[in-house]
Image (cartoon, rainbow, N blue to C red; front, side, top):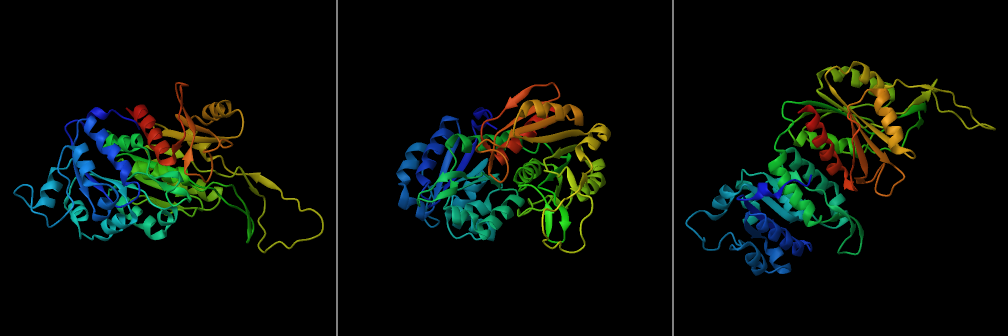
Length: 403
C-alpha cells in the first residue's frame, strides 16, 4: 500500500539502527522521513556505530543520535523513558536476529532495547540478515511471537546477500519501508469488528494409507491474508489444508486434510463470517474408493477412478446472503478470461487471478503477481509483490466494497 506520505508530517519517529550490514541503507530511510515532515530521533546500537558513523544520522535527522544508556542526558529526564513517550512510531531498520530475540525475550540491556520496552507507540521492524539466520526456527518463532503481540513486521526481500548467498533476508527498498510507515497511520484497525474466514493450502485425497492426490500449494498466500486481516483488527478463522507453516498469531486455526473435510469446516463456520476469502487449492476430484491397506505394485498399469468433490466456492456463492465472497483463480492460460468466467459462475464479489507460469508468481514462492477483478468488471493488475503486500492490497479492495 503506497499511501500518502503526508500522514507522516508532524509525527515523531524513533528510529533504531542495529549492527547489520544493511545499516548504511537506513540513512536513506531517515532522509525520506525528514523529507516527509517527520521529526526523527535515531538510536544506534554499539554494533551499528561500527558500520556507520553516528554523525551520518545526526546530519540527516538534524537531531542528536542516542547510543549510550549511561551518557549524560541531553535534557532533564530519564532519557529512554522520555524518548519512548515522545514517539508516534518506533522503527527498527535494519533489525538483526539479535535485537529481534532481545525484544521477544523481554531483554532490555542497551539504549535501543530499553526504549522499545518503554514505548507505547506502534513498532515497525524490518528484519535483515543472512538467509540461514532468517529461516532459523528460533528467529521465525521470535518474529511470530512479536507479530502476535502487535509488532508490525516488514517482510525482507529475496536476492543476493552480503555473504554472497542468495535467499530471503535483504532489507527492502526504501519505498517499501516508507509505505509500511505510512500504512501504520492509514490502516489502523480498519477491519475491527469484522469476522473473516480464510481458506488456505492444498487438500489431500487419499488413494491408500500412504499415497494421496494433491497439488503444490504451500498455503503461503492464504496465511498472508489471514495474518494481514488479523493485523488490521479482524477476528479471523483460518481453515487450512496440510502445510508446514506456523499459524499466524491471534488467528483461530482449523486443520483439515481432504476437500470433504474442508467443505464440512467451511459450512460449519461460514454463517459467522462477514467476509469469506477462499484462497485454498481444493482438489476437484478424489478417488471413488480409498484402499484400507497399502496398494502393492503389480504388473501393468493401475486405473484410478475419480469422482467429483463438492464445489465449496459455488455453494457459498448460492447461500452467501450479505457476506462478501472472494475467490482465487490460479491459471496457466487465458488467465483473465478464465477468472471472469469463474467469478460469474460462482457469484463472487472479487476474484484474484494469477498466471502460475510467471516467474515470481504461483505456488511455494514468497511473491505473487495478481490481477484483482471486482463486481463492476474493473481489473487492477498489481506488480510483483510479496504475498503479504498482495494480502493488504486485496483487503484494501475489500474495504472499498464494504464501505
